[in-house]
Image (cartoon, rainbow, N blue to C red):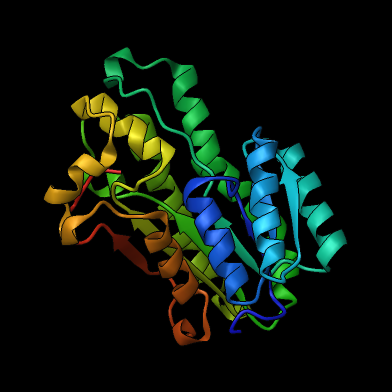
Length: 255
């Protein structure tokens, strides 16, 4: 088990991509802290699934845009597990799809604070523990939206671009401490957020209706993102840092 002895914090891991990542890391031997903001039931289900794999897991409630919540969360995880050496900044929210001229300033702050400022807070807080370990990994879950820059999504694309800037800066700052920092950028993924996006854009209630027109005959699954993360934090990716991996089947789907 390539991650045996390692402790992961995956933000927003009660559902969707975060849940798939948390389970994948547990399958590879890591103990996992499952962060959630409000859905305690889903977080408990993820924790139970990890424990069924024979790994330790705890749910940790925190709104990632709150420095106070983040401090409490990181302290609690270190108290429980002794250290954190693997962080996946996955927590995210959708923007409301309005043009810049029609965007509420509060919306801009809400989205940026969750995706980028929260990731900065948590990364800063885990670094002292991570530096004390033989290896550290930070993965930022971005989006192809930060490449396509479609109209009506400025808060989201700006937040993801800032998240990527944080990753590439951290990769240079922390390399001397044995910490790898990489970005995974999904396209459209079959999650609750992805299904809402498809309904809003196409009017389709079933995201699987897009399978026939998607790369490899299907929409991307959360497990596809999780498998990319598990590679990047594994011994097979020991010499990779400061990299961005786009996971969209080569199709350039928005996400």
